[in-house]
Length: 258
Image 1 (cartoon, rainbow, N blue to C red):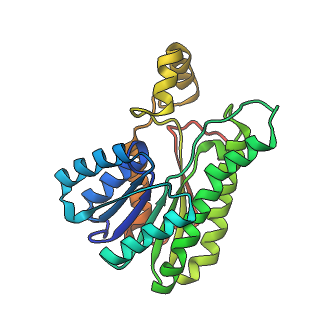
Image 2 (image 1 turned 90 degrees about the horizontal axis):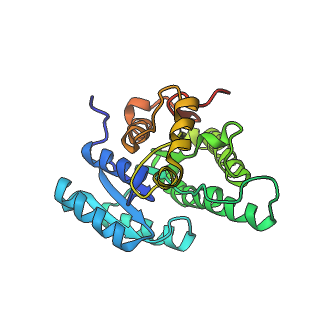
């Protein structure tokens, strides 16, 4: 299926591993010019070489740094303008589920979770929207989580921050729709990949984790990064041109409230 993405310029925050890396590969496979980013310079360099060998150096651009921070975002956007002159799609794959569980929480617990899981994505989007609005064209996809949609055992600050990000995306879609800019969310469930949190949990308490997956997920398995990436790429494409303000859940049927 032709998604109409050929030569589009795409920026994926957090794309040296996991869902972000799979998303970058999927965009490259659809002939996009793709900007990958990451805080770990070594991991980013390894991914860059891998993608350049697979898709060609002319379609890959790597920018090291924390894309939740405004000075870094602005520097990256300037590099994109200098090389490719425009930006068509942005994927805000920013966040971490680490944190204190239970209700005995400090203000610092809440501030850290919102900084990582809400404010970083909102800064990135705020910086890219002016050019998209001026061009009357663009797509933003926020990577959220099913923890922001219903009650789960995840840390409450993390869950609340992701819920706020879903609401931010919904309201932002209404605000920028008249400029022909679309904003959507993708809410993954439990995704297993090397170096991810579920790999660690399996190593530490494998029987408990497998029992949880078999009981709570109707498909009785983990998701793959590529399965989330396919949803993100579709929402960024012309095939989804009438979809905005949506939150697409990809969790093997785990959520029950929506």
